Length: 358
Image 1: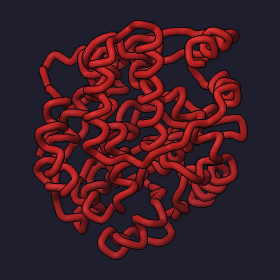
Image 2: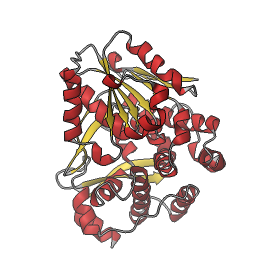
Image 3: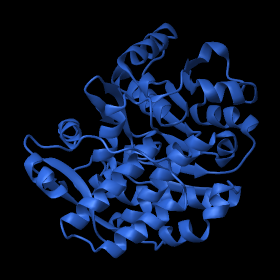
């Protein structure tokens, strides 16, 4: 078992993160031991319910089953869950529990952040992406017609329970989408300012076969490394006033891909990988890095055989990127590589981007 913790400046917002391979049948009892005699509502993904519903044995009246897919992270489902919590007469002293991937965690967390102006929240990630990224750090949100995660909050969970055994039944595409975020950490590792030297790039190169074969011990170590990097950033900058922006490496262009394809054609991780490729190309054009580093990065990406994504019209992508949360009134903000495993934020005017990339 690995027992980590996120120490936020506001002490009451600090929380433990436990990474442990254990029987899934024991999970519900473990969750209930944390909430004790509180009333609770579990938001669980449809896929997780189908595979693990009997093992988890959560009473029907205590769960809301959410269909899978980014399109479900919307106002309509937010309102349904709020109404469900109200019907159960949950109070500020009760709890919301998320069991699923990033969509479930984001939506359930946003419900928790707004219900009665804040209710306890527990994260139980079941996808690789949620384990290494979205379950840690307190970003919760829903999507709108204008873009992804445009309505949300910073709201920390009370605890994150990570059980790598869930990853055994994850389909290959969803497993790869998590690897997209894992690879991202390797390109930003030095900028995370972690006191411990973790060497994620080497780990990804040396252990690629074990990772793709989902070796439990290897995956546990991989998750631990990524979580330590995320913790290092979040502890220094909880609400993205500076350092935390580096976690958006690949996301400016990646979110535009998701939006232009209506969240139906490519997974988040696939889009982020393409966003990182875009960032490396832009960095070369801007003379921030040499081509050798770009080729090295491409070699790391190729090891994991991510889905290829076609090129989209630049003017349309710029229009969508101007809606990005990081954008200013005039500029689009990109996180770009400046050295090995090092990134920084840069602003580009739309005309400047067109000139650089055409």
